[in-house]
Image 1 (cartoon, rainbow, N blue to C red):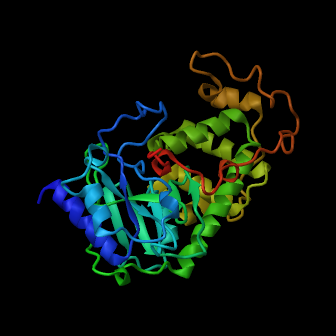
Image 2 (tube, helix red, strand yellow):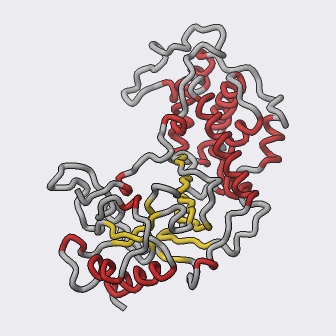
Image 3 (cartoon, one colour):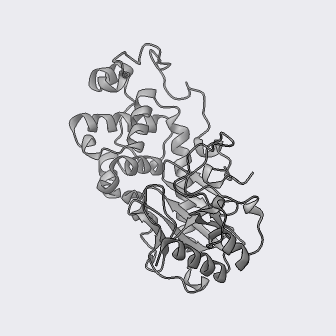
Length: 346
């Protein structure tokens, strides 16, 4: 079956199931729209106006117009997008990082064999659940988790990614009854995780910049082997001391360990190293100690010292010395529109 035939057949099937779908920009499109000069997302940008407001499924004539052989060049090689939320009766979890430490605890008491998932690579995917009002649209980029619901667009199989990879389901969908409900325990665990992550973000803003920057760099590009060296252990101790001094509770400390050690993390080992309530963590390190023990993290790319203009330099007391900063997740509008959710039809 050709790709064009597969896409047309899938669009017809999704509509038969009662899902509200729409055409998406093809994967070969430029990232800057040549007519508007604005950014667009190849393979993800929506090609029709007011797609979030559509209240009905497409007609066969509309499906033919978007994906049929007689379509205009505007819809050539269009992917298929889903209007998430109540009208399609679907809430999705978009996972960009299957951090083993986080997902092991999230799903420890859950039956996941019936989960419906679409993937294009093992490192990320969408989990499909029946629509639930309990989970609002939100993004947690550092966790690699986004809740897609009202106002969100999701790419559906067998669409292609700009990398050339094809989206596919882990099993066939015959009716919407094949889509499971989201377990209450899972909802609760996600809400707890998001709340703990927001606490961590607030506390990190109070920590010494050199420690905070090193931790954020690890979040973006995890290097676990580095942490098992003597220097890595010292860095972990310094970070934990700063976090605790600025108000981190045991769950915030454990989440930090999950970010740091990923598949190597266990709750029992962390409790053994830090103390069940963090009681083994010592006083926060002075700047002079960090320079002596962890000098490389206090240098910029040009090997100049970051310490000279650091607000912490010479301070005797750490807690409360820095202005409280709002975490990224609270700054963001929970219905923040990404490039893949923009209306490109204007």
